[in-house]
Length: 145
Image 1: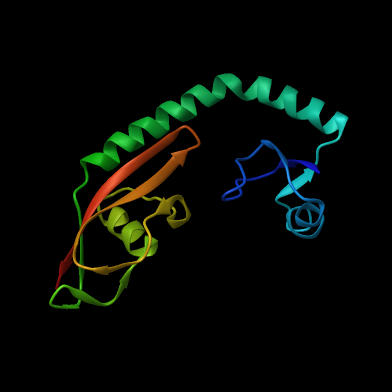
Image 2: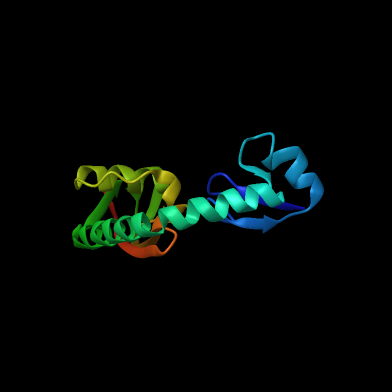
């Protein structure tokens, strides 16, 4: 079943991508949730026209994302958490990294940050997706309070 994605779907594709999925997944999840629409001939023509019109705007969006990436790399992130020795009481997640970035002056939605669950102090890296073409590795450090 061919579908056109209306928004980014993790592990499947980005907005306006044409993807092939199993019929049940498309019919029972993607279409009812509003994540996709059927890729009919007319829908593909409309999509092609929209992408053509949006191509020159896309260059500016990518430039803005790259500027934001440079600003993020300049921020030194240290997350303080309660710990007993090296082991944390609790864990550090994407939400904590997003809050640390907000304190540094850059608002990033936590959905675009991938780091895993951290349960020990130390240095780690998170992956931040600012645009489909702009993905950066962001180093951060977890320290004991």
